[in-house]
Amino acid sequence: MRQIIPVFLTLVLGIALLLVVAEMPTFGDINNPAHNVVSERYINQGVRETGAQNIVTAIITDYRAYDTLGEVTVLFAAIAAVLTVLNRLRLGVICPEDRERGLTDEDAGDPDSKDSC
Figure 1 (spheres, rainbow, N blue to C red):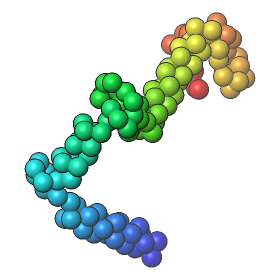
Figure 2: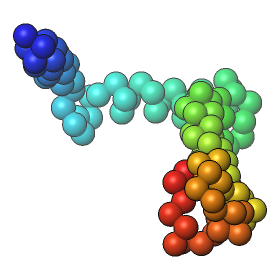
Figure 3: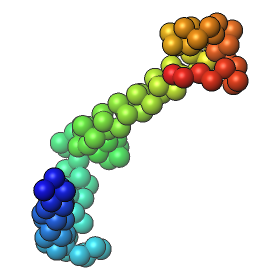
């Protein structure tokens, strides 16, 4: 019984996704709203609506601001994670579990120390 519920939910989700994909316009169709309405509005009214002289800047900073904010947040999180790891290696910090095993801060950069965290 426990395996029937996930299978059923997967089938329902799969059918729903197939129905949505069937209703999508064909790829590359010249009559798609994305090819006509959106791009025409960006080009024709972008400077007046945003006040930016560059249409690319207007799209990135005004029309797609939330998307750009999300991308910047992901990049910031990735940079913070990399800097944290590099700083940990540079400072020679080891985990409390390693201290209990008798390792010292000098063993932090040692590949043979079997660092666990």
